[in-house]
Length: 283
Length: 231
Image (cartoon, rainbow over all chains, first blue to last red; front, side, top):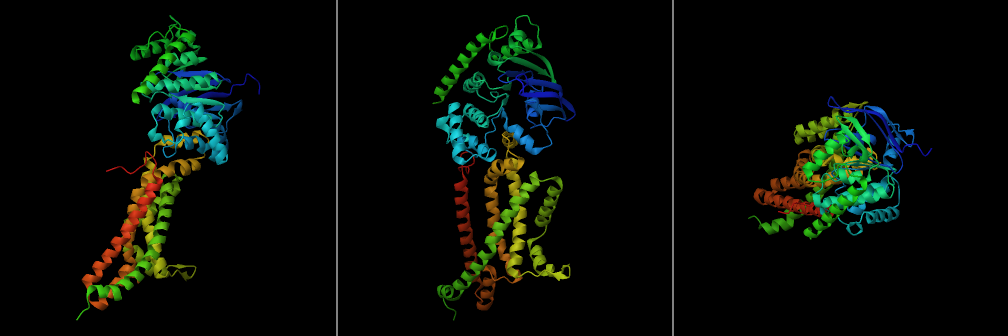
């Protein structure tokens, strides 16, 4: 495999749901260590695209290639092997409700990777530590906050050693004061070189991480490019129009037209702070 | 002329009913176990099975929930011997015939509780399991079913309580379990009130013990988010 081969590549994905063309000939690829961010109005097909990428929703046509090799979607074994290498984070966490945090991370290591209980436990503890939840290992989802649940979900996906992570609006179901802790984990991941495709409405946060913004509307990729280009003042891009609408609604100020760096320090500090403050209030 | 109740209980009724109790347990325990197993399998197949299998299990449930249990008991005991398969009729002894009827009937009801439990688990759970690389079977057995079972347990327990009581129907195909024994004693002694009231107490005790055991099981499986609602 050459350096230039994308880790994950989708070619002309089409998905029709209930007569609607939810994905219309969508192609994209992502190289090692890159972060691509899907943005766009709800119903644009972001979530469907992410779920098509690991065949949770099988695309009606199109091809998906992992490190240059096409995934044979009719082979169940190959599909399972493929999904192990593609981590998925869901909007509503989907932790296994009957298992503790530790067991949530451990179960697939044992069932899918065939690790011994001891080995799997060690790995699970390490992953929980990485997302800052070593002390919550014995708690069940019912006793975790939304932010903690999402971090356990991230630990669970990371434990499988994925080559790429797909994150489907990971903070959309969270209370505002809990978003910061999850974004921090995602930033750490990006800085550690994890390849990621992220659907989000956290524009300024993702602008600080993303190598590329992909703007989707009505099942198509309408625009793509670096956040700096798309959000530049006077860029006249659909992306910018969309983002300024979001920032008007959320009161997030001044993210359009700023470079990634300033966006990063501005927002991350804020949300980190408010996350902490929120936690203290809860205590 | 007639001896006092306590003497009757100690001398005749008690020992008789204890024998009957033993036979009842021999019928109930395997029926409950087998019924649970059938219910679990049928429930899973009704939700996750391929279409023809789903259809078959639906038919099974409709048939066994839709006909009176007495008719089913009569069928297995009286009618089955007349059905010739390769020149042989299948003759079942009373106890196996009773166990077969109860297990099949109980299984049909149990599958309904299991199906409800499975359907109450959000799709996201199975999706998350698949996304980790589990096969559908692994996702169902190690993620969905353990949760569904906890949700279904109160209903399944209820069905076992029913089973304890409808096991009395075994008496009509000559099984000398609690009710069968009691009927005999009542006929011979003419002490209907004492016999049948005492019989009632035996069933009450049996159900109480079963309720306690089921509660223990529920508690041992209880995890936060799946506990019994505190009333």
